[in-house]
Image 1: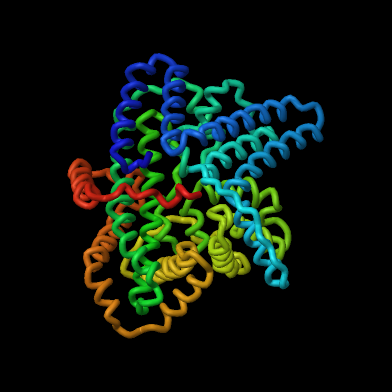
Image 2: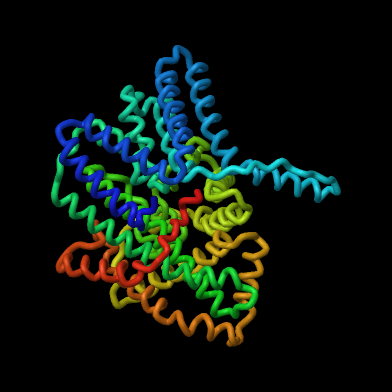
Length: 477
């Protein structure tokens, strides 16, 4: 069930009505309604994988209590690693087995040995990386005694399977979400209105921006060998806005939907394309995943303690694991490596925490420097996205080589760019709106909010009514 589908447009009001008119008297009723809605939502993808979701929930639920009840440190650690191993084992089988099998076979062939790997014909369960990380954060927090284990199985099941965040995040923490689940929510009109506004803005990002960019980005990337330099540059820009509009749009819809039920989720994007360096970009992009790796991998590895070589090692581990988390392909690993290399000069010069404050622009030299840094950061980010989008490393390499070499205006130029002028104008308007909203809590707020809402709805209808309800990019992760 896609957020940008008629199915969801029918599903959400039904759940909303049942939640506030039938389940409003108690927290138990509210949670039962939400968990049933969540299981139905997930089963719409493939009902067979519902059993995997329930198993993962049971595993973490039981393991947490076993860790808490353990008499010795060894027993606590045993239950922790047993749970982590099973969780990552399932993730590895469904997501990474074929990748490792084919990569090992290719390695053997490099030494002149013949190998025929046994590949599994498995469908990747939607959202498995997200709900696995939900559970792992809970288990690790229990192990370090940051929280108590949850005894109410319904409450914990809702924490794992809550449908707004189930298939593409944000990756929630038990310390943030469980306390909200354990109390009865009261309807607040202002919060519900904020939720509707955020849903609409998320749909603008997805339907108006991401899906429009996808048409040209797909055309250019699929035929990059026939494109000239300008076409390929535009392709990288289009995909940059496609993935941002797609994923941040999903996050906005998830956060807005959750507000309709009186529950706040973690903010996942904070205008990342206005970052002044790559460190700031990763504090603003996919915040829940970046902070997850920081808290549960980077800090346990030693974080920023020790000498520079130690810090560099930890940084490269984080970025490489982040790349691998996104998909079983060498292109994602190279994408992570590139971002680590971007980050390296900032780390070595102790400038990775320089741009943490808000900024304003005026008519001065400092503002010119800020705009230059924002533009440069976006440019290198878009360059790295080429590896993220390409099917193979060879495709990405050839794309970039051709982007910097084929400077003539070919027939293909006129076939692509002549019809994308409207899209360029649309992106510029979107950037200006985002810039105007960057210091606001809600995307559609302030004066004339109803007019803004109407314009957004008109844009969604105009550009999305005939769309094919395209899948969100991050569903594959």
